[in-house]
Length: 200
Image 1 (tube, rainbow, N blue to C red):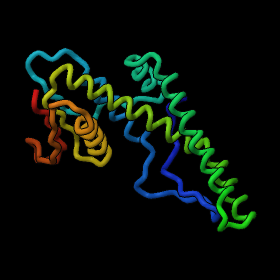
Image 2: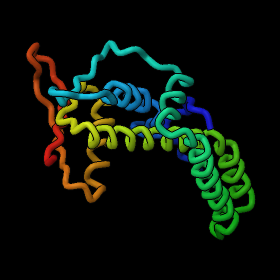
Image 3: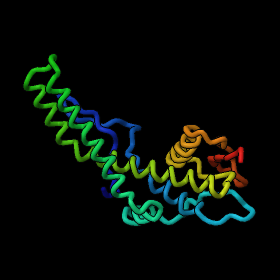
Image 4: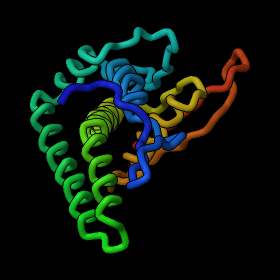
């Protein structure tokens, strides 16, 4: 259950395999989420806010994994169980193709072969998403524990996506804490994404 880049979401049928623009592998957001997690997990005394430094050191796959397991030592086992469950769903897709009465045997064979070819690829994408969602969970826990009131990042797509996922985590819980997410210029006139956490 290693962290490694897979690629965009594939579209698979009896005609072949293509890839969807805009459906990127969660791996591309994982490093940003882990960098934010590592940066905010500290003891705050007076200034309960965090501004992301775009010059923050990039992490390789092994470093990301070590940080993740420092929060959840059994994360590998958890990810493995979730990945097994996902792989089972992929097997059901093959069963559905077998049962499809509108396709010829040759079309079924082609579709099933394409699904088999892409099984490891799709499973890796699922593993990356599993790790990403766990990183978001840890960020959520740290924000609540430290009563963090604001997180600022550059206004780029990947950073915005991570902040939206964090915001989604808050909105999907029974917590009375709410968030707002907006774009505004900083003191240098550069656009930043700003997430405010309110209701402590």
